[in-house]
Image (cartoon, rainbow, N blue to C red):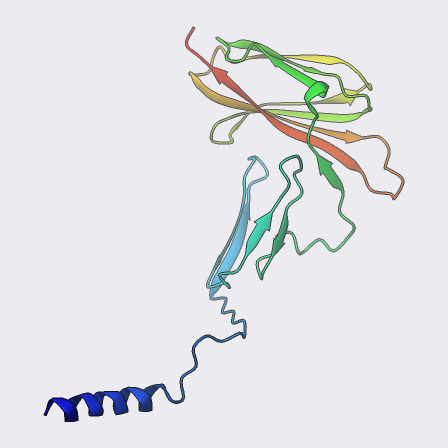
Amino acid sequence: MGKFYKAWCVLLLAGATWQATAQSAKPFVLNAAGGSFNDPNSYFHFEWSIGELTLINAMAPADSVILLTHGVLQPCTEFVTKSNISTLFATGEYRLFPNPTAGRFELDFFVRESGRMELQLTDSYGKILERREYLYSGCCRIEFFNLTPYPTGTYYVIAKLSPNRNNSDGRMITRQSGFRVVKIGN
């Protein structure tokens, strides 16, 4: 009975796998649900998708805020125009001190380009505590902040400089960065 049982199992297994294939090279996508959420009063923007292809990668150089993705989930697909370039502030273009701080700190800018500067002071959850906007003259501005009324924790100053002129190919090169500030006890 042992030989008959083994032969029957081999035959059954061979019959079951005769029409089966190992791996398919064909991509397969099923999108069951998805959406996005954007709160204009916050620093956060969320996109989600359920049932997408599992081969979605996002790549970005360490010194850039440009994000390259491939796969099905592509952010900002509703904008089909030429996109503006966004770069971080370079190391010599700003100085933030003291950090950590007991409350008062300053953020100094040394960017050699004029434009509209937008600053937002946020807590660690992205809630905007203070918003400032002014015309940046082209070099050197000191902004003073006071975290004294707020609890100990991590805060961010989000800075965005939109220049007055476009570059040679007609696109605007926006500078933006988020600066982390730690408030310690008084």
